[in-house]
Amino acid sequence: MFRYVFRRLVSAVPTLLIIVTIAFFMMRVAPGGPFDQERNLPPEIEANVLKAYGLDKPLVEQYLDYVGGLLRGDFGPSFEFRDFTVRDLIFGGFPASLQIGSMALLLAIIFGVAFGAFAALRQNSRVDYAVMTLAMTGIAIPNFVMAPILTLILGVYLSLLPVAGWGDGAWVNKILPVVALALPQVAYISRLTRGSMVEVLNSNYIRTARAKGLRERIVVGRHALKGAMLPVVSYLGPAAAAVVTGSVVIETIFEVPGIGRYFVLGALNRDYPLVMGTVIFYAMLIIALNLVVDLIYAWLDPKVRLE
Image 1: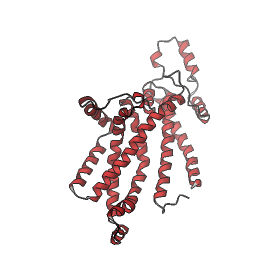
Image 2: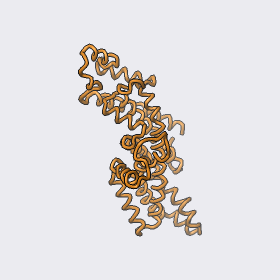
Image 3: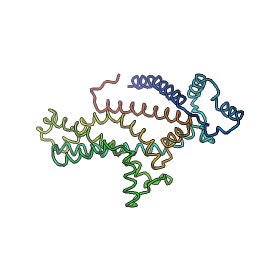
Image 4: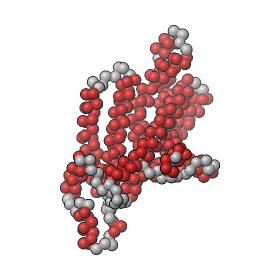
């Protein structure tokens, strides 16, 4: 187990290096620059500004300097938020992003598994068709469309929830962003659970358990559901990535002071270090979550050998 974790962590190093390289040069190739709005400055002052941030150096030298800073844990200064470093902004916004993302993922797992199992136990019934119709609708509608709809209905028309703002982390301010972020994943997990549950319920060991006279609650909860969870656990890696990337839009819509909002502001203002820092942090987070998902999968299925 420990050797497997070590190998995965070692293999993550070249993956991160490739991500850093692609993101770095893509940011520089795109037209425009971080100080385009200050083109009315005298050439001497502009040259001093570029020199202060190391932007006057050749591109390859800038890249090597940046990678060297990353090895020391330095993401560089922010061009837009000049009183903060990128590390300060990331770790300042991470608690809000962590709360929104973890709550959305937990909500998606609970309701997705419940709806999928409920539909599978009533296969080809009206309940089954209704759940799958709602799931397909949730898959078809992205969260950046669902978020304004929820805001309009629950926030504007019914005035039940605040439409934006963090409110010092009050729970009422978290409901809309969490629900908007979780709904597509609820739909995906419902379909996965339903399909896997139907297959497991028709397997031989479930027939054997029922033939032994076990209660249906034990057959479903202890045997069928555990086997049906394997595809769901496999999907948790992509689901975590989808929640992380989806939070970029959701945090901007609901004005949540998280990392995703800083990423959007950094991209709009061509804040190279801020965009790079958020991309690297998200990549590290997704790699770590995929490793955790693989370990959970091995715990659920004894046949999986990680060594």
